[in-house]
Amino acid sequence: MRFAEGQEVLAKYPSTDRYQKGTVLGMKGELYKVQFETGTEQYILPNDIRLNRPSRSTTRKTGKSPTRRSPARRSPGRRSPGRPPSSANKQDAKGTKFAKISLPRIDMPDIISTKSTDDENYSVESMPLHSRVKGLGTVTRRSTRLLSGTVKPESDLNKMVLLTRNINRAVSLPLERKSQFHEFSAEEKERGHSVQRDQDLLKSLNYEQVVHPSTEKIEKRKKEINMVNEPQEWGGWMGSFFLIFLTPLITILPQLMCTESTCTFGYFNIPEDLSSYIDLKVFGVYLGLLLFVTVISMIPIGQKVDGLQSRIGRLQYRLNGFVCCLLSIIVFVACTYKEFKIADFIINNYVQFSVSGWIIGVILSLLLFIKGGKAPIANLNIHGSTKSVIYNFWQGREINPRMGQVDFKINLFRTSMIATVLINLSIILKSIEKFDIYNLEQNNVGVLLGTLLQIIYAMDALVYEHALLTTFEVTQEGTGYMLCTGYMLYPFLPTLATKYMLYHRTTLSYLFVFPVLTFLLGYVLYRKSNLQKNEFRINPLSPSLIHVETIPTVRGKKLMVSGLWGHVRHPNYLGDIIMWWSISCISLACDIMPYYYTILCTILLVHRAIRDNERCKMRYGLAWEEYESRVKYMILPRIF
Image (cartoon, rainbow, N blue to C red; front, side, top):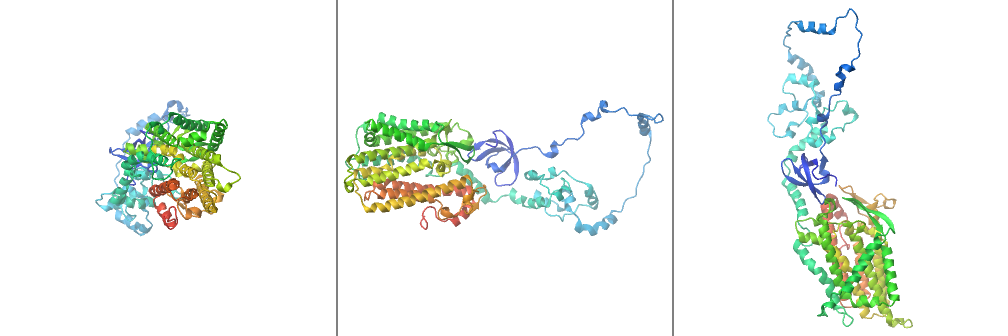
């Protein structure tokens, strides 16, 4: 936070270029709340606020110290015996009367006429500011008093006086240009600081327009303030309220449709006993996995890197997600070796794990919502700091909530990926119980291939964990109900496809070649685009990015418009969608169940691309409009 609460500053009043004195009341997102001397309160951008430093003319003191006149500093001078004392001279001088001398009136027109030929070389800058404006008559604004250098003094006498008269430039300058007080070139310094520069006068010509801004600018500023106070995404507070209840349903209901007896979309198998939904043992296992990942994440193992620059600085991350995954697999294998039948436990309690994940996500989101109410203003999520409590709870008050060394968002992400790996390992163990190595054509090859690709996807996210730190999800998305429950429910959505393949045998077929090849194509597109974006955001001047064409923005950042990012705005989303459609197609099914998560993932990524586009348009302005004209499609070329 650059400015503390209660600090006196100079802030640019909205829709004007004029700086006024004010007091910082607080901060909301990226905007500072400033109370001006008039009593009005406005939200101001950090770039429009300056420290209230005293003027140079008011702080300048005399160069002579009072102690210089002290008698103790006077040296005993030597006097000639014949020289009278100085006190006697002063008394004589006081008693002396001087004669009054009167001079005849000087004919001023003659003097001025001799200078009339030099009017072309006459510099208005040598005139005091108040003398340049007297020929304009009645004026209403400062800009009209500074119109041009052709303004002449009111009288001929003033023209002589102004040649030797200066005023303090610090007083004559408008307040918003005092920061340029020392910006003189070598030639300008010869004229002295009391002279106002031509460019300053020309700049002041627009003062009238600044004082009376257009209605369009006022409406634009009001719209920006409303975007902070009012919910802008997910259908506002009503849409968020609806999604709070829809999120668990779209995850738990498909689990009730896919059982060992029947796994078909639309056919529910709804148990009546409560134990079929809530099991304390299952809840403890899932919570134990989350705590296990949290504890391992705190161990100083793995590389320590910095995230992107944010309002609170650069957060540091310990990249040990892959280590957490390996240790979790070791524990899983050890339990299987000790015949704990952990694979059967996971598959037979699919619904209970889903409900437990939702409950854990709700508890975490409530705790983080309470924590966000006490967090510093700089930590808050601007899109989760509206007037609606429901919307803020859905979006999350903080983007990267932390408690000591624990980063909640990163730990939830790791838990979701590790749980996906463990569920797929359980499905593999369940499928190989009837595996016949001598009759491969009759084995369920589809489920082995599908689980293998899902494990590759989840492990890849943990191996390239450093690239995750520059994504929209980590840097922009708030950690609220949406992410907390989403991460805890995520493992049970993509594994619906592999669970369907487990219950519907898919024998070896040459058709598997096509989804595998498309998966590899999507993976290359996904990983290459993510790595390029990550490198560009960390170091745009990297030698490997010299060939990349960019568009500069007013915020000092750049937008890539070449390579993969020159064809669509989100090539990584396109690669992600291709991979999941490839995994679903391995089932060779005509049922919706194996494609359920793929359809849901496509909808969510399309919606995220739209949200990201609106945020960037508001953030980068004209630069983003130019980017949209260069890169016209979001995800799929010539379609969307």
